[in-house]
Structure formats: C-alpha cells, structure tokens
Image (tube, rainbow, N blue to C red; front, side):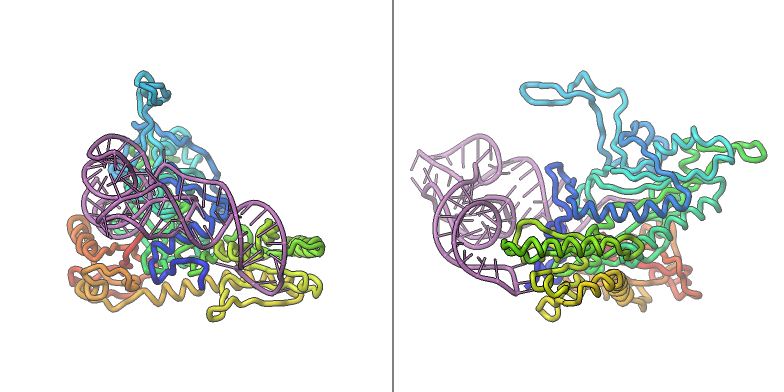
Length: 510
RNA sequence: CGGGGUGUAGCUCAGCCUGGUAGAGCAUUAGCUUUGGGAGCUAAGGGUCGCGAGUUCGAAUCCCGCCGCCCCGACCA
C-alpha cells in the first residue's frame, strides 16, 4: 500500500496534484489561479534561490528590484512584445475603493490617467532604466538580475506549472556587441543547466528554440528541456538574445570609442517556480515526492519514538545531540540540514508525512536505539523492498560519518535514474512525418507512454514553418529545441524530404 | 473562452434517478487501553448540501441561471 491514493500509472495529472497536496508543497488560494506556497514548498524554492543566486553573483551580476506595476505605455514600444503578452495582462485602473449601493467598488472618480499593468516580465521597465544608465562603452556590459513575482492571466492554471502569479528570477544584460551578448546568453543557459542538473537532479537538453517558439521580441531563444515521467517535455528555463530590438524601442545606446552613438545588444533569461513542478514530475513516486538532497530544506529528519513515558526525555536528548552532531558535518557543498520532529503526534504518522514530503533520510529512533547507540533509518529513494519498507540500523558514530555520503549518493542516484529514463525515451529512426503519425497516433489515448522524437529537418521559416507547426499540432506535438550538440551529418528533412540541416527534438509538452 | 465531468463535515465520498428536513470512513477533541513502527475501544464536536432564483405543503434531490474546481481543446518567453 502506497502513501498516495493515486498512482502515476493510474492517473498522472491526479497523482501530480496529490503530491502537491500530500507533500505539503502548496495549495490553491481563494484568489483564482494563484497558489499559496507552503513551508516545505517555499523551503525548496529558497534552496533553489540560494544556489542560483550565488552563481549569478559570482559571474558579476548585481541584484536590483524594479516595480511590480509598469505604465501601460511602456508596453506599446516593442510591437512583437505587445503581441506576445497583451492577452494575459492584469491591469490596474483605479486607486481607491468606494461604497456604492452597499458594495465596495472602484471609485469612478479615482480612475488612473494611465493604467498600470502588473508585470508579466520586466524588459520594458528595465530597458527604460538601461537607456538612462548607459552612456558610454565604459558602462558596458551592464548585468542585472531580479528575484520577483510576475503575473500572467492564464486561462488554465496548474499548480507550479502555470499559475496566474509566480515567482521567478529574471536576468537582464546590455552589451556593446552581438558577440558579447551571445556569450552572456550562452553563459546563462549553461548556468541553468548546471543548477537544474547538479542541484535539482533534473536532466535537461540544452538547445535553441525554433523561430515560432521564440520569446516575443527575441532574435534567438535557447531553452533547457526536461522529460517528465509521463514523457512530456517541460521547458525548464530560457535564455534570450534580444539583438537590438529593445535597444531600438527604448533608445538604449552608448557612445563608442570613436564617439558615435551605438545600439546596445541585450539579453534576458529566466527560471521560475515552475521548476518545482518539474522536480515533482521527475522525482516523485507513488509515495510522494523524493526531494533531491541538495534541494531538501531538511535532509535528515529524525522521528523519535516517543511513548509518553519518563524515558522520553533521554530519547529526546539523544536525538538532539545527534542532530547537533550531524549539523556540524557537510554534504553536497553545504552544512548538513538535520532536524528532529518532536511534534506531539504519532510517530508512524510523522514518518509518513516525511515520506510524502520526500525528506532524503528519515531516522526512526526508539529507546532501544538510544540505549545501544544506534540509528535506524530509511532512505527515501529505495524506500521499499518489494512492498515492505526497508530500514537500516547502524552505530550512531557510523551514521554520522556515512550521512554525507548517503546524501551525495542519493543525489547522484536520482539524477542517474532520471537521466537513464530520459535517454531511453528519446527515439530516433523517424524518417518521414508518417513515421511520427504511426508512433504518436492520430487519436489521443494518452494513457500509453510516449517519449520524445529526435528528427532531422531543413529548418523552414515563415509560412512553411507554420505549416510544420500545424501538422505537429494535429499530433499534439511541438518542437522543443534544436540541441546544441548536433550530429556531423544529416539525413532528409522529415517534413519536406529535402536535405536536412539540423536535428531537433519533438514532444508533447507542458 | 468551447466540450465533458464535478461541487454534500477538515479530507475521500454515499444519498439525488423515485422530493419528507443530513450520512459513512478517515481526521479532530476527551477518556481508557496499547506501544519497535500508518493502533484498539468508548464518547463528543463539526455541514447556510457551491451561489441565486423557481416549482412544491415540503428541495441536497426537480427546473433555470451563475460560480469554482478537474480533464480535453484553444491559448500559453
């Protein structure tokens, strides 16, 4: 019997929601489409922030904070950008409420002369600042980052994966030329890969988005794509080379060494709380979440087998000493995070709570363990042997010595497991569109597992690309990206039959 | 925004077809028992049956409208 009522095989979307709820990550709020991130979920996000913020700063970026509300007129400046976001913007129109016929309503006499939009992303207001801050080539490169909330009025929301409000990080940089801006774009992509793979243990494929999937206003968009346990792709981070589009729209220029006024080349890059959804769908099992040790707010949770008797005091002391000792140790490059759960609840209930949350190591310590100087624990990956829970008993001193290694091994095992699953579910051998149709089927009985397709194409543009998109859409497929690692030679284009120039990944996506 | 489903106690749901004034399990609280692993017994508390209007002597149940949630679609750096 599993800790969750729904299994992945029975109903993947139901199972996903069960994990979010049962692992105490988040819940829906009374505000439509928005979620309340609970302590365990927020702790996971904060781990992500800590890891990524350190890398962003180490590479020479400073953190800033721009307003959540942006004057509407700012968005009118970049045409493609407007097209991309206009349909999902929340607009602030009034600055006062008034009792009208017994109900609170926006005061008609308090309408803003210019509406404000809740930022869906900050290119426009940051670009405005750039145009004032950048005067000379000596001011470049300018490298900013902000941790913020953004709002996109989505029609259909899903916890973590797509909500009306979410938390993210947005990097914005300005450079003297394309080469420097492209270096930044690729740096951000690689930095994302390293955090997502090394810290979250989610394997990804780095690549460039096709023209029709670009960020509105970008010259080139790169992404990291991750395969979920249902075979769907999740865009886990994006990095954009914006060319001079925003510089033109917002007059971001610098005086070059020859004294001329030159347009800056800008970039932007972002990752969001969506990654937590990706972590759930990569590492979750039928007992809940398996939190990668590097991401776990608490890596070792000790559940004392308290029995409401005098000897409880001794047992509590034993556990407190053990935690203190563990917290002096280091694992995965940080001090270990151990915790004793002394909540007045039944030990078995507490154990299962931590199993569902996915604490990497859960120690269940009773009076006998304390008397014998032992630690009894379970590993969240490899939790069961058959149907039974598999527990381990070792001497306390050995546990303290082994704990960092256990956490590091678990981190590697989770990554290796996901990596193997991803690789074995990317299929080659599709030579024509008909091959794709055969594999993915024309009618959607989505219960059957379908991974990704790796195919060659001639990289059509414009109307021809749109046609390709439509054909794929009939199979509910999208082009995810063209991996940075390309083969030496290409076959025929799967769509047109002409010689191909690029290898791309095709998948169903979140 | 379109199609389908659904909404009854904190959670999972029964009751609805065939109208008669609210149920179960889990959870909560209290007591006793139990104690190396999601305990047992007893008792108690907890519900404007999503919201509104209608039919009726009487509506969780029938009719109409609206809303939320879930799935599919459209849309979605």
